[in-house]
Length: 112
Length: 116
Image 1 (cartoon, helix red, strand yellow):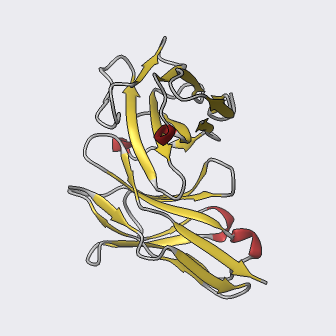
Image 2: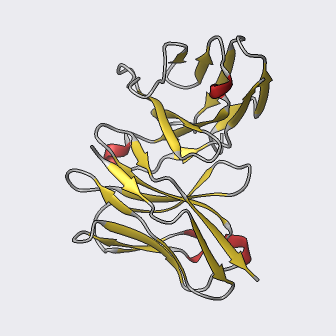
């Protein structure tokens, strides 16, 4: 079975400090990996994706993620977090067939 | 349109009633998905449409749930005889072609369903 794990339910970070949200995956074949962000009472917004090529992917709002095949990880990072980055973050991977399988989500709280 | 449009944005219904949720995908997107997000839960795949192919219904939780996509565009998710456990946010998404090709899936704002 294909799966995505986000081991932390919540991440707390001070504004200006680096932010990391962890994601590991179990997908057969070459994975397509995605990060989405959800603000309160909103839908999901696409941040970035890894399809092929450079392992470091840059996305919206200063976020980036690093694909690590040996560790089957795709951690989301931001060098300097903002209070406005407080939201729910989802990692997703291409599953069998055509649908994305999502992790359980990680709530990020950035404190001033 | 500019994005995936869903209606209604909020729906409160009585237990046992039927509800219909509508999704209008991004123009030109051939793939359409429905997901469900229950309170405090992650995202649960429900159904996937691609062009004229038979839909992937593998995520529908019971036979009370059905969906159709007319003319390859607008989709309607129908829940019959609603139960309280159906209360959730129903998210529609679309992409240019199947995500198997790596295309991004774009989500709507969701339809918030409350069954009382």
